[in-house]
Amino acid sequence: MEVEKTQENITGKENDEPKIVYRGWKVMPFIIGNETFEKLGIVGSSSNLVIYLTTVFNMKSITAATVVNIYGGTSNFGTIVAAFLCDSYFGRYKTLSFAMIACFLGSVAMDLTAVINQLHPDKCAKEIGSVCKGPSIGQIMFLAGAMVLLVIGAGGIRPCNLPFGADQFDPKTKEGKRGIESFFNWYFFTFTFAQMVSLTLIVYVQSNVSWSIGLAIPAILMLLGCIIFFAGSKLYVKVKASGSPIHSITRVIVVAIKKRRLKLVGSSSDGLYNYIAKDSKNSKLSHTKQFRCLDKAAIQTPDDKLNIDGSPANPWNFCSIQQVEEVKCVIRVLPVWLSAALFYLAYIQQTTYTIFQSLQSDRRLGSGTFQIPAATYTVFLMLGMTIFIPIYDRVLVPFLRKYTGRDGGITQLQRVGAGLFLCIASMMVSAGVEQHRRNVALTRPTLGFAPRKGAISSMSGMCLIPQLVLMGIGDALAGVGQMEFYYKQFPENMRSFAGSLYYCGIGLASYLSSFLLSAVHDVTEGSRGGNWLPEDLNKGRLEYFYYFVAGVMTLNFAYFLLVSHWYRYKDVVDKDKSCDEFDKVSV
Image 1: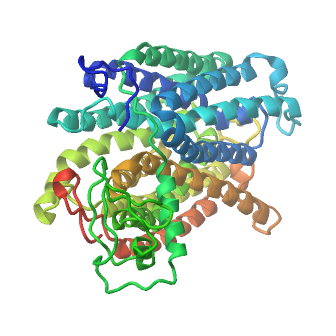
Image 2: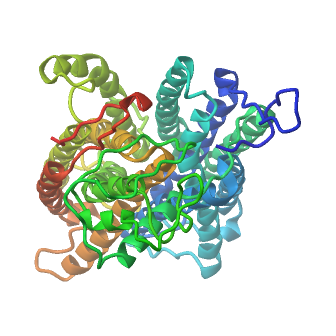
Image 3: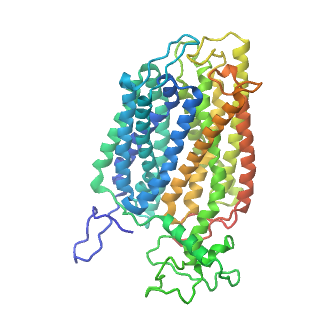
């Protein structure tokens, strides 16, 4: 693995290799400090976006939710492009540097849309039935430009931050391995911390003080993050780009297609070309019987020549069985990924329409006048996740370990499956709560009117907490379980790609959510039962939409059980080379 010469060199001969100086925790104040401020900046700019678009840009609820879903989906799909550019050309340090600057500029541009009156439409009148003036094309273009910069920044930061921090530890030593595991914990802690601060303090400033100040705070935090990150520039281990795993995946598929007419002899790997480079970082994999058609890429014909070291003279003519098995690891994960990614279809509803529910609920604390900002309710989702993770790790895992004999208590897919089940429960609870909120609004005295919405139900906003906590626990199981599953099941040199795959799943769910919202709105708008998703939720049937999503998730859960039964975990021949737990069968 090549490393830029920012590290100290061994004195001696000119041909000596540069010495990699792993400074570990010495550089963590720069990396974790940057991570904290960067997350505060990104989350602070986007966590209250749906309210910003409806109140400042005068968008309808359905339009704002669709824009937020597209923005989130594009940010997450952008990670696959960033991972490719990072691995193939720029390396993690340069990719992170560019992405953080883009994120800072995007935060500044977003704040300008609030500061400069010409960059947003006039404020709507508070009278019921008043007509609001929407944003002009120029205002939309400037807002879109700010969001594009944030997409570039988030897309570049997400797949690179975690691996870059892990690069600072020596993976060959016990201290280094423990440091990597501890860094993962700190990474998720800072992410959760940033979410909670953004959903409380920053959202409060945006909703109750000033959007100009509230959006300036994330921009300032992003600037601080950039300064902290670049301050440690000379101390980092900077791994150079070594080629994208997409190349090796493509190569195996192309060679297998070329040799599709050749016949395999027997069901074992005997007679197939088997070569592993000396500098390979990947664990040696056992031969598997799934996707046997790909094994043809490892058939060596008389025309296939070898170099002196045993490697293929032309890697586009034949591949090793090790390369084939690495591609199989990726292909096997994809059906599971599709099902696990749909968990976020339900998750997204709790971060958009739950906010609209809270706007037409009693958000007062006790008998006072203080109101909880609508977007702040999603902090209960994060609290559910934060509180459950240590309980799961310290109580449930040791308890389950006694009965299953597994270090993790249960398999990774069982953990994801439990999270999918809880997300169905969360959507069912959401439907019941919405039905109650609407009935209270229609049959009991209301608490006034929400601007551009409708009557405010006297149901306490605290009734929304159970659905959010259930989804938070589901995320602790399904979300964290997915990241662990991809990290362990992908070959070691594809783990940046694995991280981007996780975010692509969230992106897929975001786009699917946008499609469902638009489809349900268009189909029900002219129906006898009325529009399910109008501006005034009291005139709609949001609970029907929640039941519909719960039904989709139930079908998805059945599909997940099917592919989990079919799935076979990665089986390592040289287990000493990997500290992960592997199983030959799934659930």
